[in-house]
Length: 156
Image (tube, rainbow, N blue to C red; front, side, top):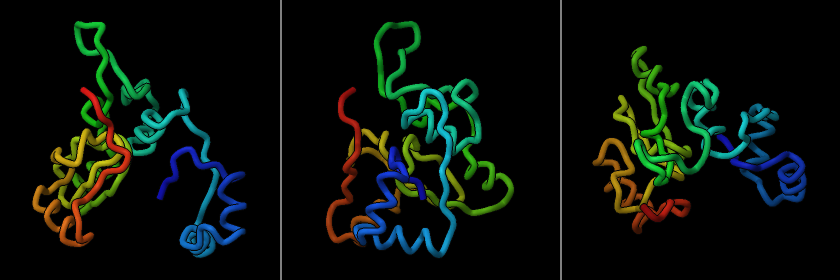
């Protein structure tokens, strides 16, 4: 489990005050720790480094925006901008079944032996943000309403 931009000086008091009981249980029964981020220390390169084990110079994601090829125009960065394999794809290639949910910069979802629900770089809830596609209907039935991506980007 990862918490984007959450620092222990914020989280620890909230846990101690009882505001985050599930996280408190995970911390007491599991392992938690402080990680040093990459440069630049922002969401796209940090999460992409986490999921590839490589630095931004090797995986190619540096910011929320990137220049379109042969242009000065900008577009939103997403998982298709990544130049390195993810840990779950490496595990698939080794014969393991994998699944991920709501990890930033995983849109479009990879075709895995398992499942993937894309994260923050998903353009809208109408996009194909799940693999396999049949999972979308299961999600909608399980939550009783339309599956809502609260952190989806908008724009072109």
